[in-house]
Length: 158
Image (cartoon, rainbow, N blue to C red; front, side, top):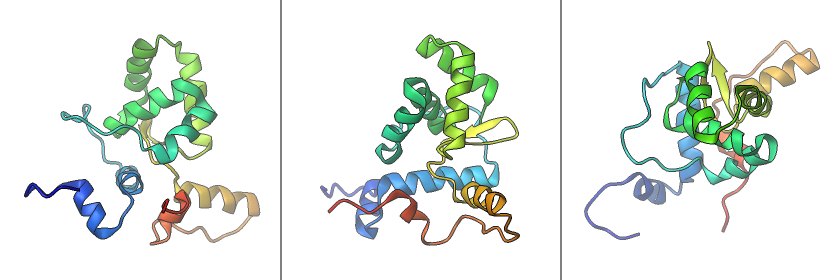
């Protein structure tokens, strides 16, 4: 890390010993929790979908799934119709295949929806707990958001 006098996201994460990709996903998750919608893609060069989840996305939903996650990552809260339209043009995929990929990603909590809009949340602890609770017929459902949230992404490589 070089010091050119600029304060950067990566430099802050380095000082705090925070995992950049996990923090980026947490921000996406927080936008989902609050229903924050961006009306267009970020106007600047954006980092790719965090590698912590990229391979998992491709494993469960293929390259169509990765394209969907990438689009939602650079435009959190994107409307499903717009998401399908943009990705179908870029990837030359039909919308039925894309919906199948979206379903697979939502089932794995890698992407989360709300009122027909999508966010790339990585792992969604609230939805995980809700599913677990419904499967176990438990009354108590925790809200995802504890300081242990980053443990959903494994340990930091040494």
